[in-house]
Image 1: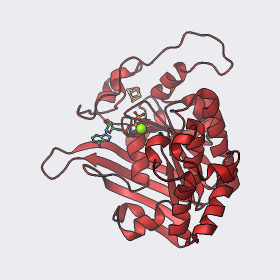
Image 2: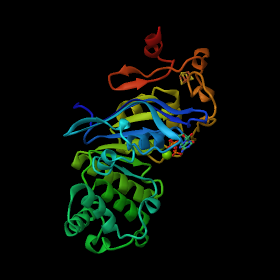
Image 3: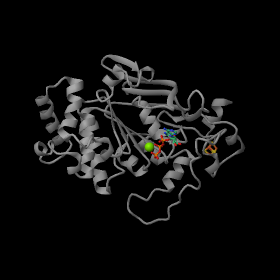
Image 4: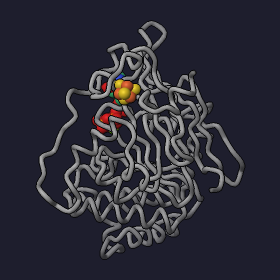
Length: 335
Ligand SMILES: Nc1ncnc2c1ncn2[C@@H]1O[C@H](COP(=O)(O)OP(=O)(O)OP(=O)(O)O)[C@@H](O)[C@H]1O
Ligand code: SF4
Ligand SMILES: [Mg+2]
């Protein structure tokens, strides 16, 4: 595989200021995004998916900050560590929306109610690519067509409130892909939509990612969405990457007890009615100090050493790694 377009290495995210107690929200995050591929980031609520996505856009605001690690974007101008850039500075503003774009969960709050959707798509095209008003509008109409909005010439002149939820999310996608970014981050892009529209939007994202050669980070808490839409998967638990694999390897052979727990709580794809087993307990809050494996309090296989030391992610095979003491590769790495 070619060098990743985007790479987070050993990233930690902390909360706190000079006078407040520092808390670690996420640590040791390693992820790579490749052209035309989708990496899914999955985990329950509060696992650190959104803070990871925001750090990838250099959009964390106080009291959150990246305290360790590098976040490298590779473009034709070469690699650049965006973790070191001023979040509101000129360089970062030139990257955001142009090289890395993000689709948020709720298009109603992300879209501006007082501008037409055509104007909102045009804005980035004029700012980043220097298009004239007329050129940008024509391109906005093309983009609305590309994301499957009927009568795009007419729709471009509409305001967000005149569109359905699904259409608004398509507009968000048009804004995100307008400047042909290398990296697209979609944080729970369909949770506000009904099931049929969800599937259509996810299909559209996957198709555009492949056709335009974008590297996509898809954030979801739904393993069904992962199975249908991802090439690679990272499972996060309480700010840690606990398993990483190609989508086939993960579903054929889930290794981490947390991943297995998530799968046991997933309804079968064929619609059969079976008793689902939710994982007992909840993700521990960040205020709770944890030594050792963060899943220990909910894990059916917990052993004494689990409470002593956090297991590091180790390879089970070249495309499958796990952080759990059950695996000899993990135990041998510290022996
Ligand atoms: N601005 C903030 N200030 C304080 N704590 C925060 C802030 N943002 C996030 N957190 C905490 O960081 C942890 C991770 O939050 P995050 O929003 O990344 O979770 P998530 O995996 O995206 O969850 P969800 O599925 O609910 O969107 C949570 O414990 C959350 O309470
Ligand atoms: S390290 Fe221990 S507690 Fe953590 S998932 Fe593995 S067996 Fe369970
Ligand atoms: Mg979130």
